[in-house]
Length: 212
View 1: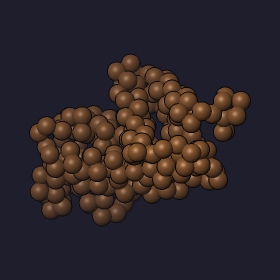
View 2 (view 1 turned 90 degrees about the horizontal axis):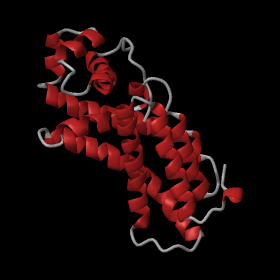
View 3 (view 1 turned 120 degrees about the vertical axis):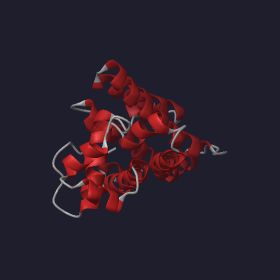
View 4 (view 1 turned 135 degrees about the horizontal axis):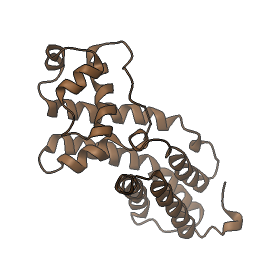
């Protein structure tokens, strides 16, 4: 996902500034540890402004997940991995692009919705569902390229395209968790390297012919 860093939100409407603050602070501190005071302070708004836009912290969490989906969707739609003509090249370019984002402090490259859903999946169904829509929605953007790559190579689909698209997110989200557990971004890059190898093996791409 995109890597906006923690900073004072650009001046604008209070709701947008609160969502930008939530995007950054929750990735750093987690959903439960982030307080309404934290959000108001970072967004430079009053508590009255917070409750004018959001009836509760949970409502803010749902809106933050939707905000993340919109922001990250625009970010990935413009990313360079869409350029190759061969759909398999696009899949591998996507994995390489995701790997290239793994740098700097941990919170800068980890995923807001992945962070939130790990904490609240059992207690806040509304946030869980918003996070699921974001994660599965992003996975779905890969399905057409995977299916096209399978068709070009005469491979049967039988739902494998959708499943592989979801699997990419399994690896990426898991890579973020391992990076946090080991306090080391290299662990996340390692996970993406294995995902690259796995895709190449599935499509029987010899190393000497691997798309760049």
